[in-house]
Picture 1 (cartoon, rainbow, N blue to C red):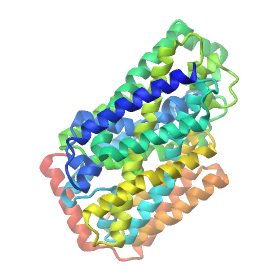
Picture 2: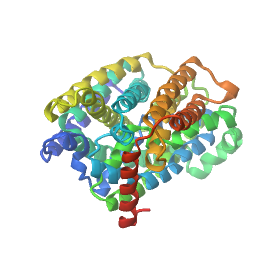
Picture 3: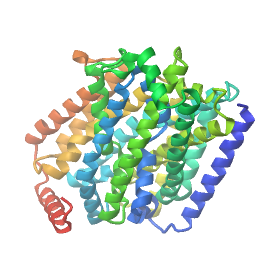
Length: 492
C-alpha cells in the first residue's frame, strides 16, 4: 500500500475526529469538573463506549494478536481474566460514583488523599501513576508506528507513525477535555468494533474458507496452540504473573477508574458496565482469531507484534479493508492515549499543584492541567522511540506498577484502620520493586513483578497501618455515607 494512500486516510480521519471534538466543546461549561469529568453528566451509552475505547487499545489487535501468535489459546485465558475483573467495576463502581458526587472528587488519587487525610499521599499516588503510565501510553504510539510502517512496506518510517499518534492524542485531549474525549471515544469505539468484526470475517473466509477450516488447519499444523499451557510461551507462573495485574486493571489504572465518576446516574453506570462487557467479549475473540490467522499464514515472523501488519499486507486484503483496519487500530490507540493524558493532567493539577499550593484558583489549576498535556505527550513520544519489547509485555509492566495502589483503594472503602502512612509506604516500596523487577529482569522464585508488587504493597499497607494512627473521624464519616447511600439506592 502506498504511503500517500495511508497518509490521506489518516489525515481524513484526523479532520473528522477534530470536527467531532470541536462540536463536543460547544456544550462545555466552565470549571475543573466540566473539563475533566464532563460535569458528571455522561449518559450510559456514551459512557460504555468511552470506557471501552479507553480500555481497549493498540494492545488488542496488535499486542493480544501477537500474544496469540506466540502462546496460542493461553492468550484468550489471559484476556478473559481481565474481563472477569469487571466484577470489581460492578462492586466498586457505585461506591466511586457516590463519593465522587458527595466530595466532588475529580481523580481517584484525590479520593485516596482525602479518605486518608494526607496531601502527601495524594501527591505520591499521582506521581506514581504518571511514572507507570508512561510505558502503557508509549505502547499506543508504538502500535500505530509499527502498523503504519508494516502496512506501507517501510515507506512510512516507524517514527512518522509515532509522531502522527502523538499529534492526534494531544489535539483531541486539549480541545475540550472529557466531553470531547468522550465523543471522540464513542466515534472510535464504534469504528473499532465494526472494522474489527468485518475484517476478521473477511480474512477468515477469504484465506481459509471459514472458521471450521481455520481451526482444522490449526489442529493439524499447530495443535499445541490450542492446548494448555501451549507451545511454551506461557507456563503457570508466567500466566499468573501477567494475569493478576490485568484482573485489577479497572481499579489500578486511573484513566479507567476515573470513568467511574462520569455517569450521570447509577442506572447509566449499569448500562456502562453491561455495554463494556459485550464490547470486550467480542473484541477479545476477534483479536484472538486475528493472531491464529497470522500464525497459519505467516509462521516465521521474527517479531510477534508484526502479525497484524503482515495480515494486512496480504494480496487477498483489498486496500479499503486494510485502511479501515488501520483506522480501527489507530482509533483504539488514540482513544487510550488521550484518556490517559487527560486523567494524568487532572491528577497533576489537582493532586500535585493544588495540594502544594491550596490557594491557587480553579482557572490556574485548569491551566496547569492543560500545560501538562503536551509535556506528557513529549515524554511518551521519547519512550516510544526506544521501541522496547513486546507491546503486551509493556502494557502489563505498567499494570504491575499501578497495582501498588489497589490495597489502599480497597482499604478506603472497607478498612477503617487503614492509614496514610500504610498507603504511602505500600505505594513507594511496591512501586520501586515493580520497576526494579520489571526492567532488571528479576523474578524471585520464578514469579513476575506483578505478583511481587501486589504482595509487598498489600503486606506493607496492612502492617504499617496497624502501627500508625488512622484518620478515624474521616473513616467513620466516609464509610457511613457510602454504606447508607448504597442501602438507600439498593446498589449493593
